[in-house]
Image (cartoon, rainbow, N blue to C red; front, side, top):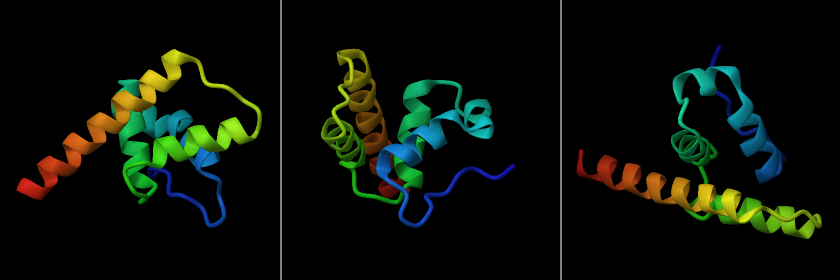
Length: 89
């Protein structure tokens, strides 16, 4: 089963949710922080993709717990490290 790709017109939070819950992603990336970072990267968006997701959820009247906001921050940091490592190679 291939890893998920962002669909045309799919909202950021919809893609991240689908990507995080994808069976293949869970198998390949059991660590949630790493999986979230990979989902951001697969979305082919700028580094602030996680923050866009949070803003979209807030507009819908949904609030993320501080634990989930920390998870997104940690994933963003992990993604930045991955991007820096890729630049070096």
